[in-house]
Length: 453
Ligand code: AMP
Ligand code: GLY
Image (cartoon, rainbow, N blue to C red; front, side):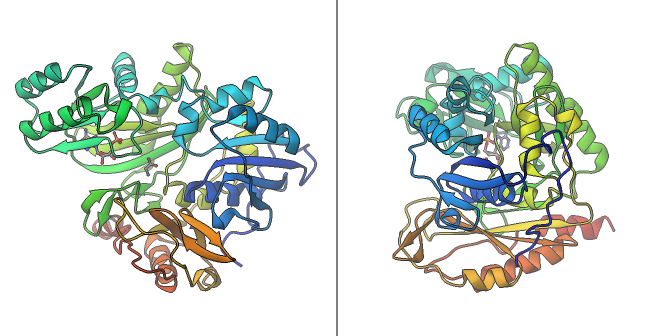
């Protein structure tokens, strides 16, 4: 029996009149985040079955969870699938379908969806939109300017008196469209590559140039129904590939939650000056934001500043936040969709910590092999851990690698060091050729805890 299974306690919101085990849910996506979402939703007594499209080997025929062969970019086919299967809630994991308007189209077809509309998702899909929004609403962020002409961008770079610069493709670039430049020449080169060479396709047609921020990076997420903001415990991702924050940026190599660097007072400040301000601003601008709002923050010496917004759960942050959610995720999501979150606020486990360690394919974030057999999954589960699959597939009944980030091993403990030790034990029991993973997830938080004792 792995941790927390069956321990989810319903808050008793106003969907509790729904007969137990009546509902079918569809989760869109195929990564570790979507496996974790399906895992948590399947714990709800309201939920009979969770489909995941496209899913992975971990969500294929796993108790109440199975994969659905429906093309997620074809919104008409998705709507038909939802009608055929009597889907009562669609939960959208990744940003691309949100930016493509899946929530707009399914809602128009009468299907209940958890996630923002395409217009609201611009907070993530257009950095020039989000930076201008921050400015209109006094939300703390790095000083910046947006450009559609490379010449203008380079002359700004050459005249800017920021100590260092960051160049960002404005559109969605799978977390790769950000170049931290150590010289002005490097920043101009990044502009040219994005705008003229189209290294990020249309995502780089507009670029944002901003000052480099220094400090600890933290992910602060909340549920929101467009009015009420319910913060989740803060988490920290580890974006670099290698120990000691070395190597290239990745989608995230591991995370822990809660992040002890964020005190209750600081979380309250972030809630008021970033999350609530954003939700109120979007509503006042006629674009109500519903779903999960994720603020990527830098804790600078001048206070927290927003690096970016994401319009969905983080991956791998989701894999450490959901194990700490005491409430029924299905009830919380339904309360968001019905705009009654204030009467169904989520409750979180106190006195516990979660850690997840990503195991990735050799070569990631560049090219990597596929089809390598993964062994030891059952042993990790016997240790009481959750293994959330990402780039995995089933071939002739064997679980094999099929992506860059292959899986994440999540442990829950009474404190961070205990959870970390457990997660590392799980990682040691799982094998595939060339597996890479970080051994220092949470190390800075543990050092912070020691220092503040
Ligand atoms: P973004 O997609 O904007 O979050 O950027 C991806 C990553 O680049 C962030 O998670 C940070 O690690 C880094 N980054 C982005 N903007 C800045 C900045 N202004 N200063 C320092 N690092 C940044
Ligand atoms: N872990 C960072 C992200 O999901 O964007």
